[in-house]
Amino acid sequence: MQTGLVSITFRQLGVDDVLGVMGRAGLTAVEWGGDVHVPVGDVAAAERTAAASADHGVRVVAYGSYYRAGDHEPGEFDDVLRSAVALGAPRIRVWAGTLGSAEATAEHRGRVAADLRRIAGLAGGEGVEIAVEHHPNTLTDTLESALELYAAADHPGLRPYWQPRLGQHPDDALREATALLPGLVTVHVFTWTAAGERLPLADGAALWTPVLGTLAGRDDAERYALLEFVPGDDPEALVRDAVTLREWLGGGLTPS
Image (cartoon, rainbow, N blue to C red; front, side):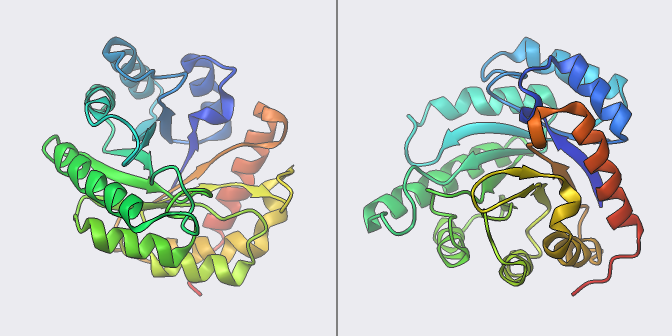
């Protein structure tokens, strides 16, 4: 399992500085964000960032867009895809609409599913997958809703992009991650309290070691553990959390 970073962890830093911190932390994979580091539609910035990543020995594994399926104008995805291709990203992170599953109508769910199918087809034509962020206030805010959405969208180019919900019990986290296999290739790794306070990654060992053990214990795909949102937006916290993550992955985690 390859370790890396979600670049929006350091929105305050430029691309070269992010890559420098990653080098110090020993991280070799990156999801570049589409808001600051690789703005949507700026192909030149995407190409520069791709070249800089390669120069630092960092693999681009995703383009983190803020495209919300079923909500944005259909043509807006064109710039997202163009940027991802210029960046050399194999997948694009998107969000599943603008409503949580408890609020969503059948019409909303159908619109989101149809748009996911549409953009997955467009991206697939460029050899790119669509990764759907598991996030509150979207249709992936519960496992059951997410699975229903993927079934409705019914496209092989869709991938879940999992992260734990705040305050989630470790057993529930493991159940979710396991249920999303084999399609689950990437997890966003962090430790927060139920109230949203950021903690050192090591404080989340009870949740993360079973989840990572299950993912790393499979040999059916290359998978990525991408660190995100460290305490205080502090590069030193990333270096510390990267040590923890590598110790977990190198310590012979056993699948649960």
